[in-house]
Image (tube, rainbow, N blue to C red):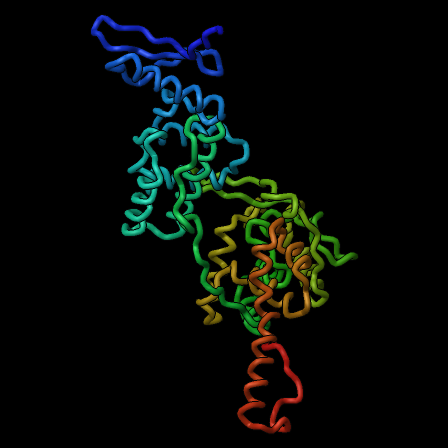
Length: 375
């Protein structure tokens, strides 16, 4: 019976210890990280490596020595899926929150190390949102390392570490929207109305062109998102994050006349909203104008983004379905749109309250004749 050929190669060194090596799937000779006291020890190590290769779980120990900071930087540099705003955020978090890990080899980032880093970060002075962003970035980097076979599994196993429990956002009433419109500079009134009644983001509003408005059809089409970076003050028109972000939205009829007035008095030759010098409106300019308006209207609890939340909530109250909300939001996922259906779902709580009143009074005549949604 022919003897099975041994995987790898073992040689005895002048020191008397044994060195084990093998040729990896890429055709490169790899050496054991340590020498062995006895030949059987070297043979057992080779047998484990052979088994890992046959199962497809073998990783290159030498490549796994690459430092997390260096590898994360290269992933940021080379990934075409990372937008400029998210890249800037990740670079900042790498400097601020992930510093304790930047000199750690990839293969040394165990679930315990990651858990301890996360717990220590939460005990520090950093914000919960930026820490969650840092964790998501690290998880993405380590997923890349798994795909590139530098490590066997992702060590980012902390439940919920990448999530931030969003607080319930305030909802502006139609009367409060009017107060803001009256308080803000006339050239920005339409921006407030579009945010509140069409649920556009600030960047989407700043990116609108005159050609994106169709008064005859009563629609606004979102094609671009104005991106502004903190570093260097760079600004440019970027594509929406997903194809769903490109969308055409019906303008409520009561807003159309004000959009028409804006086009006649304040719009630029190409841009729907412009700065004093006629260039594209900067998001911060709109934000500062909004801050002054909310102070004058005594509505300091509202943010500009709350207007988008208001628009979707009012749409849900008006009977918009989940699909309707997703389309108006420009979201490919239903997760965000579901947040606004709690207003409609609130009918069940009102029905339950009415049933409790019936049990308490024992008299159906004392109950309200109808159950209506709260405005």
